[in-house]
Length: 244
Image 1 (cartoon, rainbow, N blue to C red):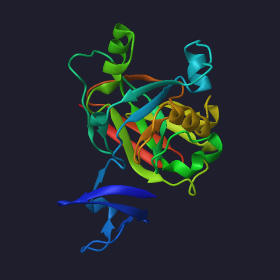
Image 2 (image 1 turned 45 degrees about the horizontal axis):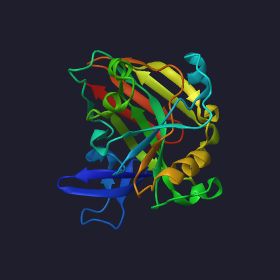
Image 3 (image 1 turned 60 degrees about the vertical axis):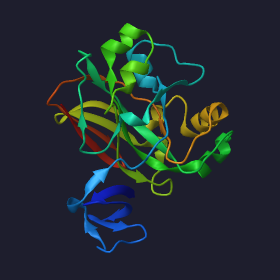
């Protein structure tokens, strides 16, 4: 499990083990207690490629047909925040929703990657909250404004490698103020991760650190100022953010 951290003016990646952080390459300060450090977003994506309507239970929830091919949209890197950062409720919206998602972090620059080779380009997995101004999404008829506000791409807390986790049947949960709102499994994905990587890289080059947000299960709902929203994925951890 690898995270990105700040200690004073120093920013570094490090491995987490038993509550301690071991910086990659070492630092003059040696190792750290996790509680001493600020947790930063674990990736610097040039783009976030999101997949809409990619859980069977979510499609059933809205009585929508299963798509024949993945429905893609982008979030800008300026929307990224990390674990513990604040989600800002924009004044132009009256309805902001949470969407719990598994995120794939790309480890190699890649283009035209077959599903069979997809594992070669994955650095690991993390938690993602695809925060959405739902009223603006409905008003605009397309998704760019609703999905792109600063702080609307919560990412983290850490990256778990493909060797550390079997992502084919992993629990994904969203809680708001401690109350479970979403509870599903990655086994409900319509398009699995190897297929998504093949589909996306046929369209665009993915850079190191880019993120694929794989879609949200049923139970999406509303956030209010003062809420604390948690995205937990089995084997990865919990991404926690407050809405302000």
